[in-house]
Structure formats: structure tokens, C-alpha cells
Image 1 (cartoon, rainbow, N blue to C red):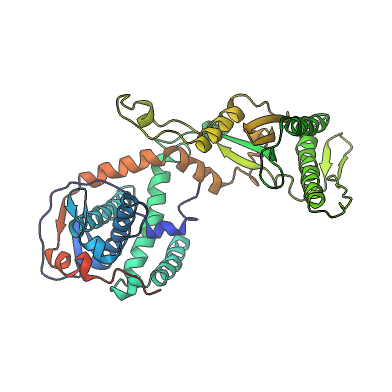
Image 2: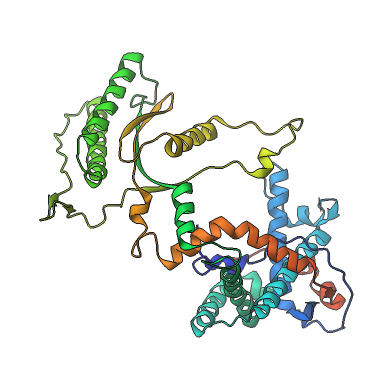
Length: 414
């Protein structure tokens, strides 16, 4: 989860992945602009930029079709994608992205948006970086003004998103509802794995496996003996270190060396006058992980049963089952042992996520925006696609001829 501002790379891919079929016409003989959509001009530098991105997408598509073998420039030039020759496919993609670019500008004006000086300054920095990041930009005539427009559009896109899908916005939700969404779809967990293989990676015999299970259960009991929730979470780190020391000692012994005696230092805790546990640890959440709930997409749920789909891999299945266990079975603040796979078991504990929904932790403005994006970004994309679909697109035939994909420098010398 990443916000628009923090994802600077969005400047390199801020198209809305729309699928547009607006009417087209040829305009003008000059090549300063590539197209116009509902009167919003898109300069040729922006069009060239998106043409380069579309070429890279074509390379990726052809690579996937050819056992991940990267095609040469000559291969791409002679290829067909979706029954179109590569040049036409690439220009169509560039046109879609340019229309989406214009749709963002149009909707930003529609909501009365205005970028702050801070936004403009950050967009300018972003433009400078990405102009030089890919040498093909300058090699093909993409100038700083075009890159600034692309960068500024990421901030305009964010403003549109917040206008429609922000806290208490028309299509968004209240802050309490967002907290509920966070709590239902994410979990704060700690876990470490215990291997059921020996130092050489061979499967243990049943007796040794049973001993490792007993050790895992002992670790869980030690954690659960602690009276407070924070104490349990901190004790989990202590137990984790104990296991690491055990593994190190076993490895040393297997190599014929004398095991070094190790001692595990517990995290220092004390109790204040009110009886509340206080810890000297600077970051008590350092080893926690935030796990997102895995869900089945609507497309998967409504899939035609007569259509053959790729079978779930064993690794994916193990990951999914562990995820379901954490969200559906694991009790908060109770350490448990989980059989992850035939050769791995986990010691795991889950905390109360709401305890970390504070202004200096998971409930900052940036983090709330990230959650809103996670929840609503697909809907936002569809909304922007709808706007772009209705735009009347006029292509500048001179620019399309001059900046035809294979007339550009498509391979980087970087």
C-alpha cells in the first residue's frame, strides 16, 4: 500500500489503464501536440513518453508469451499482439494513456482543483528525476515541461481520488468505517518458523519431528504464561531469539565444533505506579508484521466451471491456509503452534490492531490515504475510465507519423 505522493514511480505509470474507444479524427500539420481530447491538448512529449511505456509493455507481453524470454527490438517490430501488428498496438496503448491523461486534467478542473506550491515543487523534482532516469526520454525529445505535466497529473489524480473517495466524501466512508475495514482486512502478527529438516535439509525422522513440536509447544506456553498483552508480545521476541540460539548451537555441533553457551536477554520491562507495563524497548512493534486478508475476486467466484484454470500451487495453498487461520481461528494474544507444511511449523501470535490506530502509528493522514486507496482504487479507476470513454479524441496525424514507435530510440544505452 503506497500513496500517490510516496509512489514517485507513479509519474512513470500514471495512466489509468483505461480502455477507450472514443471517436477519432486527424487534426493539424504541426507536431507540437499529439492529440486533443474534449479540447484538452496533449503535447507530443507526453505522447512520446507513453509510446515508450507502451513499447515496454509490449516487450513484457511478448516475453510472457515466450517462456519469459525477452524479445529483441527486431522481434517486437515483427510481432502481433491481440491480432494487431506491434506498431499499431503500441500506438493504441499510447493513445489510451494520453486520453486518460487528458481525462485527469478535465476532471481536476471539474472539481475546481488547484495544486499547492508544495505539490508543484514536488512534481518538479519528480519530473527532473524521471527525465534523467530513462535516457530514452531525452533521446526522443521528451522535455522537462512534458515530464512536469505528467508528474503534476499524479497530484491531480490524488486530489480527484480524495474528492470522491476520501473520508466522508460522496463515494468514500467515515473514519470509523475505515477503521472497521482496516481491522477486518489486516492483522498484526508475529511468527517464526521451526524447521523439521536437519542441517543438510533432509527430512527429520518422526521422533525428531515430535521433539521439535514439543519445543514449539514449550515456546508457546512460555509466552502465554505472561499476564499482560504487551508482555506476551515482548516475550515472543525473547522466545524467538532462544530458538535462533538453539539452531546456531545445533549447527555448530553438527560441524564438530564446541557449542558456545548462549544466554538470551529478555526485553527490559517494569511497572509504573498505575500497574501499567512499561518497556525500555524503543520500538516494541519492530518485529511485528502486517498481514492482509486474502480474498477471492469476484471474477474467480463467478468463473465458468467448464473453463479450466491453473491449479493452485502447493506453496500458494499453504500461504492461503495460513492466512485463513490467522483471520478466522487465531485468538488475539494467545501464542499457538501452526503446522505450516510437512517440513515447517510456526509459532505465531496476533495482536489487537486497533491498539495501533493512533496518530503517531498506523493512523496518520498518509496511512489513512493508503487504506482508502486499497479499498476504493479499483472503483476510482472505473470512474476515470468512464470519463475517458466519453471524451472525443482528435489525433494529430502528423505527430502519429513522426513519432511512430519504431522511428523512436526504443533501447536504452544506460
